[in-house]
Length: 241
Image 1: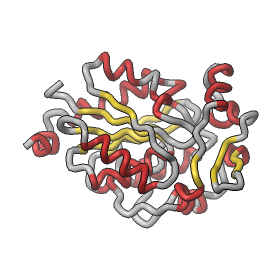
Image 2 (image 1 turned 120 degrees about the horizontal axis):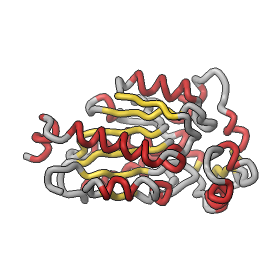
Image 3 (image 1 turned 45 degrees about the vertical axis):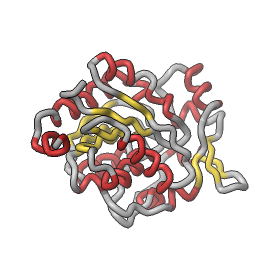
């Protein structure tokens, strides 16, 4: 394990760490130390701190992988983690400093189809309509699995969408980005924009929003490629000194 980078997986909205359950075995079989966060989805700052602590607890150089809202989390957390050497975005938000998820969404030409399925409750928490969940969040997975995801979804606060990024980690670290071309929650055009803005190494998949569930092998291979590219680099060597 000493010559490999640790991998910290950060989940997005309406999900938890188990959303990586199909990817983790592939990464572990490749010999990597892999952990996944369980974020509160109460505020960006709180989730960035949870991610920072998880990264801090890893023995040596670490790569952060964020899906969806988790992309904003790793963007914010990166500057707090001296042992983090790279960022991987899986259909994830990559805001710049001063931007929020809400401001990025407002800059788009039109909202994605999945926006119509979001239901706020009286406590400032956002859910996805359970009947609409499979067709908007994960339309390319087994229906039974999609219904389980809908039933066990973890809601996110409005505050998480309004919190602004203070430091954009991708400006100082190498980045990789996977675009989901059939994403109904984040417009694929927006994903391309964010990937190009951060000058990330990019791949595209014909996937729904949850590519790590519908295309776990491809996502694992993408993460492994990023990790393998960082091994032996100057940034890797510096982080180990």
